[in-house]
Length: 242
Image 1 (cartoon, rainbow, N blue to C red):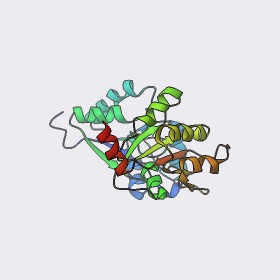
Image 2 (cartoon, helix red, strand yellow; image 1 turned 90 degrees about the vertical axis):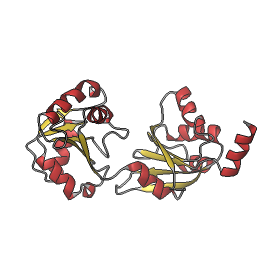
Image 3 (tube, rainbow, N blue to C red; image 1 turned 90 degrees about the horizontal axis):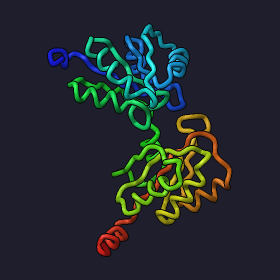
Image 4 (tube, rainbow, N blue to C red; image 1 turned 180 degrees about the vertical axis):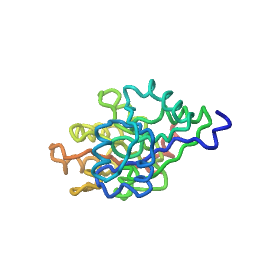
């Protein structure tokens, strides 16, 4: 494998999170040249290829959260044999709150290059829309569903100096904002909805104000929650007390 390491690679392709126009020419080229497509959902990927007029003769393999550990070594074997393997998720960048980490880790362990073809990613987009500080942020993926884990999720960030960005289901959004309010206090925050789609919008205010804006009704579309960090003065006071 060491002799091949400079010539073999895994290509990671970002797919649109809503707007088909975000699939770049470079991404289309990679999809067309792929010999193996590792897909979170093969049906979703085939639908995308059709909508984007991408002519692909690649073999499609399922690579999702339930088979990732078992499927990753097989992908490494294909790459090592010289196959052009492209990894995609249903939307966004594989490996970031989507399947991908296992095979990326194995690429590292086997000295295989990873090529990333960028595209839409909801977390940094929501951060920019929020108007909150952009110099440093923590992206924590999806907020846990269970109440205890959800409370810890926010309490762990209580004294953080970084903006918090996380994904949440619209059905749990109002409840989650309440948990964040209790754990963090009434901080500046924002919720980005329907990213890149026709009805994209970003609600801005405080945690309590966002709860009021939602009015108890679940919004449409997946939500990205952005919460301001603890102000520097308060962080210093907390450190002094410790």
